[in-house]
Length: 199
Image (cartoon, rainbow, N blue to C red; front, side):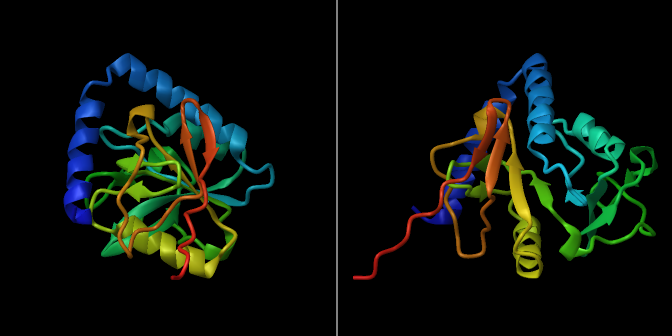
């Protein structure tokens, strides 16, 4: 099957799974994910990137608050023609951006790629190899690729509800993997992709 058609089928399947997830289960899983993330963060983290959740995404707000309380520099996405990350020193100062998602002000400092330890990224689906299905616009894939080129030490963690972990996510040449998947059940390092043996 064509990868794009496969991706659309998976998008539809995940949407149905999420629709069946009730409010209580979402809240319980979100709390567990936040705890898992905090436990996994390197003790000496200088800066991390994360995101403000939208509908159907894990509620990371307790995690974001805890990060700021630890004195770690937090950067959140801003959609300024391309995806960029700006510092969020106070979650109360965020304002709706281009897609009505709360963002740091345009005057906030831009991320220095060399300082980034961990990026917590959203996705519609993940598999245990770290393959990620996004929302189709490629913004995160382009940013991850550029960040990896600028700082190969950065680690990318995908976060999602348990029902969004699937056996296989179809990938195309422009798609980027994550290094680990974090769900309510725990922190799972992604398996290395299989090496193709030349014939």
